Length: 247
Image (cartoon, rainbow, N blue to C red):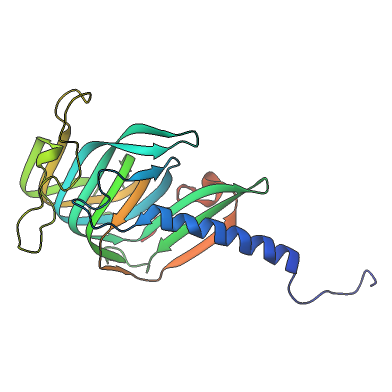
């Protein structure tokens, strides 16, 4: 073949590598987004992956919401370790735009998987679900792109400093509040007494970015314009933190 010749068709070696990367990283979604039917959502004995993911949304709207500190078990590669997270649980919620990303290394190369949902319309829900639980280690808010709000807005009956064990969120089939829905430990030994929590009838968070260990959704869940892609690069260059918050 001369220098002027062109090659058409699929480069199978490159395609095979990318397909393997995609399959391996997509298996991470099954680990991160799980479904449970125990007392809470994940259950008190749930063991999570040790690596956090990044997420962002222009607006998180919730009803019957509780935020509470809880200890979780994470896999470190050499065993499990106890870490504390802010568990966000709500009976129903919606997201205006959503991005979730995590970077993994395959054959010495960094690859980032991104899960996004967006329609380009501000203050219009793109993701909605019921009985939702997030375990996050950091949550921040900015003043863009959502100009209708910044930070967090709580309405209705709001309790600051409640015990995480006393938070109320979703209800059982009989309509009664589920006891200890965030799966806080009943035994306070070794955790310095009560775990701090916030309980509210309605909560809204605007322009949110943060780090998350897992999301548990009992469902049903609706996702508009779902896009899953695997791209070369790190979180800083290809993940949710690399660009503006989507909506």
